Length: 168
Image (tube, rainbow, N blue to C red; front, top):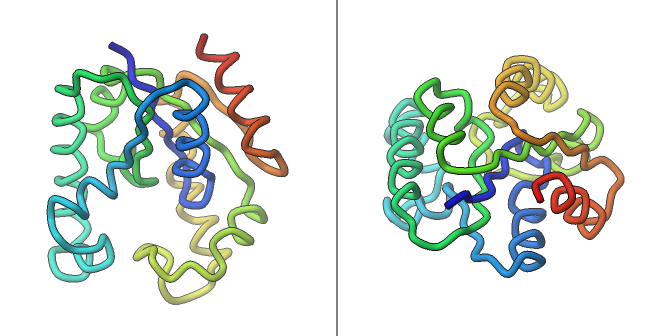
């Protein structure tokens, strides 16, 4: 059974688009960060602060393995850093069709400027942080993705139709 997995940078629209896509396709939606928060009984920020990023990345890998056991096909949104863990890349491919949601830096800046929940964007110049992380992640996102969709200046309905056409 092939799930549909949404990857991309923070603020690219993985969760929002994923929910719309799931509704459009009549599938369940889930988010790996939400599942980890439920399991750990603490927010991602707190996990990063108390246990560190490496621990959180291990939790992401374990969550992918658990999702591989899911009986029901679903749309899955994953954290922006999840594909960067080498072990997660083949798991993502095995789990289903990987959709990379792309957004340019200006779009991400606008979407993330008031978001205080993202540990990797705390402190310093937001544009520099986004640009640095994007530079480090983009080639991995491209390598892992089966489909790439640009989300800049598009309505959810337009993005959902574009994904539906490319994955059918």
